[in-house]
Image (cartoon, rainbow, N blue to C red; front, side, top):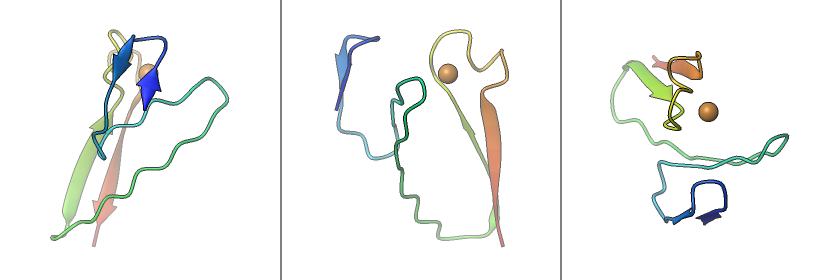
Length: 57
Ligand SMILES: [Cu+2]
């Protein structure tokens, strides 16, 4: 995947760059229950609230 905004290229299965209005998919396979946080890694986005959590039961 190439991210034009960041000028980076990566194949990490745990990262997705989504264009405004776009959609991407990440498959997480959990091996235990718990709460797992996720966040946008673009500078300033975490602080702006682009974070969330997944609860696995
Ligand atoms: Cu973001």
